[in-house]
Image 1 (cartoon, rainbow, N blue to C red):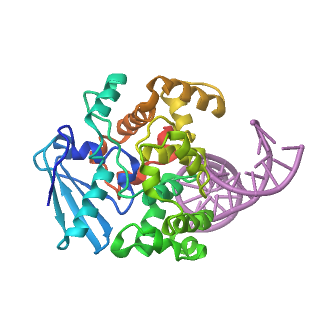
Image 2 (image 1 turned 180 degrees about the vertical axis):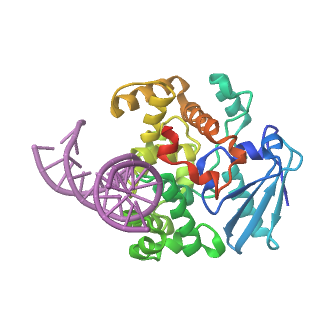
Image 3 (image 1 turned 135 degrees about the vertical axis):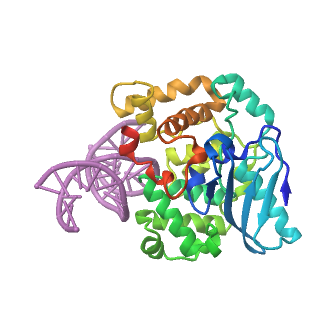
Length: 317
DNA sequence: GGTAGACCTGGACGC
DNA sequence: GCGTCCAGGTCTACC
């Protein structure tokens, strides 16, 4: 299969743009001489109505050229629609070029590299669970939780569906996936998705304003102010900052702010206020630049090695 | 409306 | 190598 992309689309840059690309079932494999060529392969299992399929994606022609997809089995017509929809969501292929131009006009620092798109999951459910597994925990534990969720409850290594998790006892998630106290919240969330009480179509509807969506998110189990703001950016609404201890570290280390955590958080929020509806992109790419300064270009990171090294101690160095 | 403390896990650190 | 401490965001109880 081949998939057309926007003229500015660059697989290596646009996949390796947010931490979720390092979480299972996602796998980015840097190609030979990746630092110079930015060549690489993206691979993951997608759970389609007709069964799981492993999709391997490359962009042999470079920026703006079509993506080449290899699937582990023959894809039926009905599956093809779902596959295309999920890939479009995950890779942000439907992000309008004018939106990115507006972002680069507001924050020209990212115009040359073309950074703007942020990788996400093929479904809102996966984005929500990945966000919950990133709360109140260090990055290596987030990696582990996602790996085990896929291994234990996903079909053939796919991310588990809401239906699959809704049927589990919280204790099973705790025992097999190491999610700790998040167990009941994850099962409760899965039930809300599986029964349609949380409808992704409603959350993805651009007609609803940010505040209405934020209010609904914050009512969900395990979702507080940080998680709600993060899910908003995953929904393509970039006017909110998920402030956490990383924001404070960024304020201290990069922005040279002094004072207690609370006051630094407030000042970080104020710093990005001028970027309005694009503020998360400006904020995130600053953080990303810091990580790349530590570990090299993100398209050279490997899930099993570099990806696991993002500990609090490393970032404080 | 604001805040202290519990929740669970594993990295970091001291011995 | 082992034991202990502590970071991390959300939730509840309480002021």
